Image (tube, rainbow over all chains, first blue to last red; front, side, top):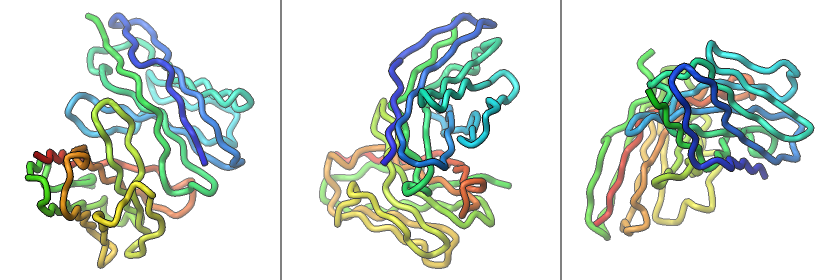
Length: 115
Length: 116
């Protein structure tokens, strides 16, 4: 079984600044993927970034990057140059191994961006 | 590529009634997933299909819940004898699958169910 924990219920950032959202996970699988999804208010879940566990290099997507610490089972999301449109609920999720096929989500972090 | 679509977007029903939701996955996506999300929480897995075969069901999926994907394309999720505790957002997702490298899931807008 996999578990995902997001310990920050809410975070805030000033526009154009950088913010980091934390996520820890637990799995006994050797082969798994990790994801960050964004869910704006009343809008659908959007994939932000994906990390393959076997890759040592941290994934990046434009202003979004991750800090993947496999030994510590930590997977944080860094948002650079924050924009008002980044305001949303952010979910960390994992998939792999015997739970292959279903995503296990964390509790979410609400990100507020101040102008 | 039109994305995952779900219908209806909102459903209000009285306790004890049956409801059915539909999900249309991204074209050529073999896998289709159903999740339930309550307010302020992360989605919880309900069930998923590989083509028309239902491969896994969560223990969350009681006997009142049934899902089908008869021709390996769209899927329906039916809830019989709805209860107030069934009020939630029901999310559908699809992926190319199988294989971890092709299993990135793309979500639809969800169906919000309110049971009065």
